[in-house]
Amino acid sequence: MTHKVITVDENADIAEAQEKMTRHQIRHLPVVGEDNLLLGIVTDRDIRSALPSSRLTAADSEEQRKRLTEIKIKDIMTKNPFTISPADTIQDALLLIQNKRVGALPVVDDHGRLKGILSVRDLLRAVINVLGLGEPGTLLGILVEQKIGQMKKIVDAITEEKVSFGSILVARYWDEGKRAVFPYLLTQNVGPVKRKLQKMGYTLLDPMEWYLDHLPGQDMQDISD
Image (cartoon, rainbow, N blue to C red; front, side, top):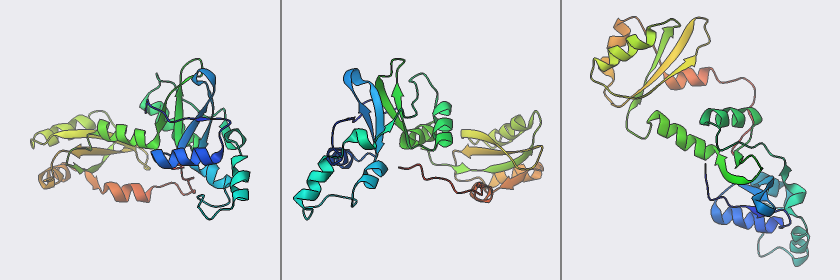
């Protein structure tokens, strides 16, 4: 999580909140009260919805600016937002963000005090670190039967080629009794590995095509805001 959190007072006006977001290049502002208690959260989408235009300019009239300063954060913030605990896991955060369609989660202690904020960007950075994607490599896709021993066979076959793993993931496949295995190999020369796996009877998948072919049919809300 991000420990040093930029926050806003519930009685601040939306111009102040917009200025903070622009200056710190953030999209979410937790709203806190006394003793750092979390009162709500305001997003750049909330501010855009309240403003007559996306940004205040020098051409705006004083009357318009005065009306905007009368709109307080407490009038547009989301009260009782979804939160997460410092003791929760990355998995907990990923599932909550996916299920609730939010772009960030305030991190609060048992007393409701703000301790940090966890955004989609933070989670992406964590996943990249966990999967070893920061190192150059190649992602393979392998279709396997769902039975004991398959993973060991694949790992043994690859390590026999003296290739190191960055990570390995197993995903559900749409055919019953099948799984998709995605090893991230720390090499660009995967030709020998591919040929060996095919000789062993495995079907290779293009990871990107597999993902695109199986995207959910329904529209998904953009959670970047």
